[in-house]
Length: 168
Image (tube, rainbow, N blue to C red):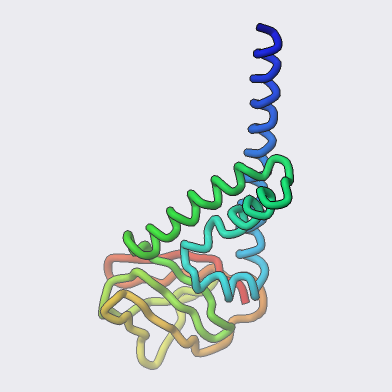
């Protein structure tokens, strides 16, 4: 009986460490997305579906080369990829990212409406307000470039708004 108990305790320790690894990878992924402009720019195009990409990749590599404690990362990555795909494609939850220092893209807002853009707490003035298309998407050219680094962005229409941290 004590042999079985020891095996259970060892499995719990292993799973616990794997969960910590998976959680750590998710934290690193978010930190990199919010602080490293190329990562933000290229993975931002995937919208919410980019969540889970790094844990998934670590899990796959871990499974192939037998890295201990990475199987939870694969599970977490798959779950986050599926949830992100659902959020972006089915639920159409609003999302914003910086395509470059002058352009932000927003998805999932009210359709065919003017948008208000707030960058780092200040409302951006436009000669002609940007407008969403029939899908709630807008590519917004800012009147002035965003400086390098992180920015808090709020984009809103009459009934929906999205907050995001963008990096250029």
